[in-house]
Image (cartoon, rainbow, N blue to C red; front, side):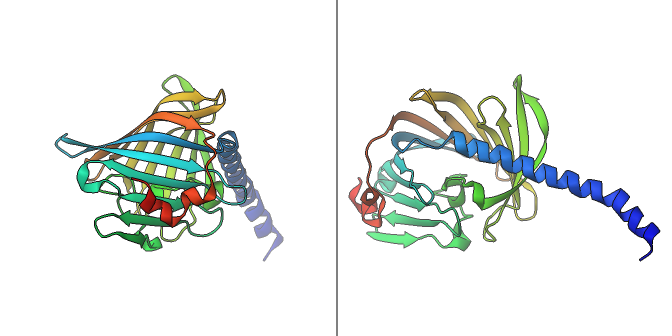
Length: 260
């Protein structure tokens, strides 16, 4: 290769590589800060209302008990159990999120008195008829994605980072996600989900953030809208209680059967 050709390649492509690396590093920095600011809540319980809306605007409500716990050397543990309606009462989902590797999820079906492990290839499927996939209900560990900072944008009068993240799990139902993060508190405000064909499939919006224990921010409402089937699912969170002193055994598979 001639010296002139080498100089040409360096002049035109090296700055682009540096810029791309800067975008990757900035994306990682932003998402690491989002995670850092949300750490240290220890554990919590919360009452959750799930409102399913079909394409005609007809709604169905479900009431859920949820509890979650941080762990020292791994991802979060979360248990969700349905209270209403009667046909799903007692149905439970247990999630173990891991920093590295695939997450573990188990679904308890009281009618069958059976605990079913959710296979990795099925985690892109809908959870209990909602617009949330099983993988959406895992905690969003930083190590589960690669990142790229796109730009800044003002939304609702506030400055936001826009970061693209790419799931590392080959079984994910998404090729990428685009997230809006507010600059003041590093909270998610909106996430767009793109399916395996890179088509804009869903959008998750976060509303009514409130602070708990003078440091923990939580959105009290989220709406996941499916742009293909025109359905949506709203989650409304009430009665957060932190530092409940939960134990590891509160999140084992037997806990799926104990909670009613």
